[in-house]
Image (tube, rainbow, N blue to C red; front, top):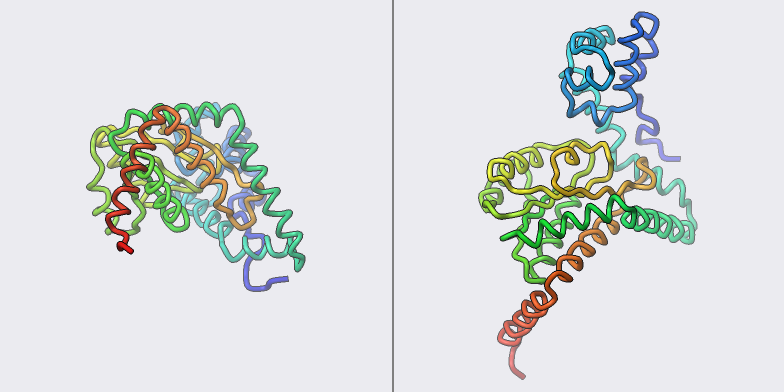
Length: 292
C-alpha cells in the first residue's frame, strides 16, 4: 500500500455538519444537507439560488454557513475547493488505480476495456446524442472553432484543433496558462464557436476564456465529466462523459473519441469539404517532399 498520499481526504464540510447538527434548526439542516450533497453545484451558486432550491431564505443560508463555523459563503466555497484539490490529487488517484490492477497486466487490460466501454456507452446515451447534434449544428455555422483546455486536456485540445482544421473547418487552440493565454484569446472573434473541455471546478483560464466568449457572443460547446459542472448552465450544447471511478486516474481516450465523433459528425454535413481540404494538404505536402 502506498503511504505518501491521503487515501481518504477528510470532507471538512461533512465533518462540521456532524459536529453541529444538534444546533441547527430544521430549515438550516435542509440547507446544510443540500450543500453537503451538492458540493460541486454550491461552488457556482449564490445564497439566493441555494435558498430557492432548499425552499428557505438567503438569510437562512448565510446563518447556516456561519453556524457551521465559516465566516461566510466565500469561506465555505474556499473550503470546498480545498477538498476538491485534495481528492483530485493525481498521486492519490494513480495509487488507487494501481492498487486495483495489482501486478497483473491482464487486470490493467480489463480496467482499460471496462473504462472505455463505460465511456462509450455514456456517449451513446440519448442526452449525449442530442448534445452532439446540437454541437454539430453550431459548428456548421462557425467561422472558426476555438478549442479550450489546459494540462492534459490542453494536449487533446491542440489535437482537436488540428483535427477540425484538417477537415476543412479552421480551428485554433486555447491552451496556455497564466497571462500568456491572453495572446491566444485575442484570436477569438464574433462568428466563432468555443469548444471547452472542462473537468471539475473552473480555473482562472477557463473563466477568462468564458468572459471573452460572452463579450463576443460566441456560443459554447461544453464537454464535461459531471452533470454538476457549471458549464452546463451556460453552454448552448453539452456532452457529459463521467469517469467510471472518480477516485482513480483519469483516462483521456474517451474525450478523444468524443471529439473525433464530433469531427465525423461535422464532416458528414458536407462531405466534399474535408475531401477538398485533404486533397489540398496532399498537394502542399508534395511540394515540400524532396524530389527523388
